[in-house]
Length: 178
Image (cartoon, rainbow, N blue to C red; front, side, top):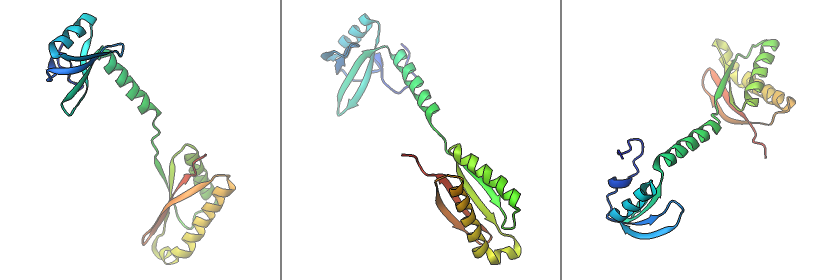
């Protein structure tokens, strides 16, 4: 059998140890065998000899169908990858003089993003002289956003609060359900 390029697991004649603890394909312990004896037993069964652990000079090998095992591992990894939920941060930029209808549209987008499981970064952008009133208007705007989330029936948590010269932003996410 060719050396497997995908896996770094030593199999068959590529095993370096001369003696090893061998486990049959049924899970039965065959005891300590030489490399030659273990390979002969594996070939009689029509399977491969695969090293499970190689710690402290004590090698444990199992007789198994390596290709089938590798396929099962890849399939399980692909299944786990499918189940992963990637959390994205969606950003909404608002200005302090935003119209009521525009605000409602942006707010509804934020609610939709939160319901999808994403985090929402709400950024208030202050231009020119607006920056001088940032503390009052920014705090009022974020208080309004917080109140609207509560009114919409969402339990949100505000994670970070970034406050620079002309920008003030907060990241919101839904409180985990217990």
